[in-house]
Image 1 (cartoon, rainbow, N blue to C red):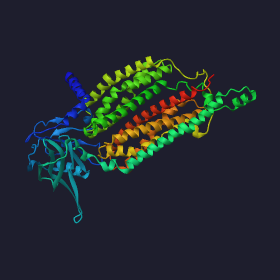
Image 2 (image 1 turned 30 degrees about the vertical axis):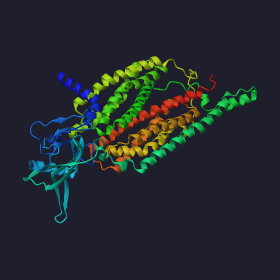
Image 3 (image 1 turned 30 degrees about the horizontal axis):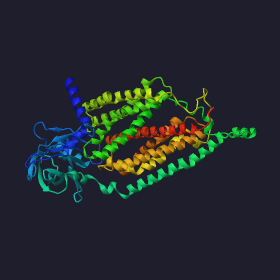
Image 4 (image 1 turned 135 degrees about the vertical axis):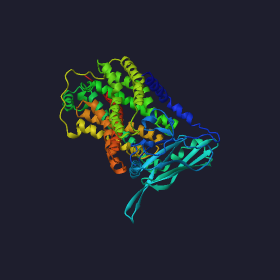
Length: 588
């Protein structure tokens, strides 16, 4: 028990300082003839990125004895990486001719394993000095004359290493000598190494993995311009048309006329958002849950902004699992924000069960992710995949939540309650709720909520394609400057659309605007998930229960976070708008 706790605590420290860890790796230097390690990582079907297995789950040449393992931090483990020392002889600047690694004696079991893997287009991943190498394990050859299909296994690996001075710049791998898989045969597995000098700087060595034509294509710039024009249109709509209407309303409501007939006529014609001033600041239903989702959404908004900025500054895409590690650590450190926003809102609305609100705020999003992750982890364990999260890693994540995230959320709740002050609503809330008249179908909360996410989704539609492609199709996403710009556009569009929807709802004399404004903004996530279904069937070749469950499970986790984030931002923007307009009218 003590050793388990010590190992978990050590892994926690490694995870917390992961950024520093992979920063030091960027200075790898080697002496001539110094041993360079080839790390084998994983294998799996090429079309199913998350369905990965230990490299030695296939009967390849296994290194003698206990091979060394390399752990790069929490994010690397969660990403399904398990680096094992291949123990092949490779020294810095020393060429190696074709050399035998081992001889594989093929029996019926090994032949079946290799044939099944080749038939499913299995690929593998190696690492040399933190630079990846990829390749397929074999190929399928069709003999049309004899109407036969042969499965050929590549038996020779040629490794090319480019170096500049005492540092490795680029690695590449080619394979040849495909041999048929026949029971009773022996296959000689060989490799060769060739060192090639280059003048490419060490700081530019990762550029070769970045697909500049794909991410910086003209359509990417066009989508940014299109979203920017949408922002101008919406802000113009809110500032010119909406505020002009409000000025007319203010003029009507503030007019003081001694003419009794005119006054009676104005009162009889009075309608719209002014009539619900006695109910508009009534506390929303399920205040505990509402304050929790708004607080969590405010934290997620700050978290995404922080992670994007760190990715731009630190080029986190270079390190294996660096983005995931940064996200988890920053989530824990920003938990104060969720507690502060939730506690302040709950206190201002007269809530008494603040402990319940605090616990729900601190555990809402993590436990939703845990529930989805538990189901996916069970599937991964059943399949024996590297995507299964080890128990020790789960302990580390729980320790981060229990000893960092939860206390910060508690502190934020206490500070938010004490600093929130008394309710300062511009209008007094009446004791008896006003009945809500029936309106046309397009002014109902459900329709307003569903339509509210269309324009925000349109502003991020193209960027979602690039994000999905990078995550599910082996491309390295590195244009975080684009992502920052699109994220800011999304926030502005979400606030503007939610304000317009809230104004229409109040004009329909429906004062239940809080949840409606939240769902109106959160519905963006519904359209993203709907798009993910289209992307799965039209843009990928994924198949099988394992990959399908992981695809839609991870996408559901993403959309839940996006929905809570957008919903909170939409509500907070609408809240400022509502307080602003009711501050300028005469309330009874």
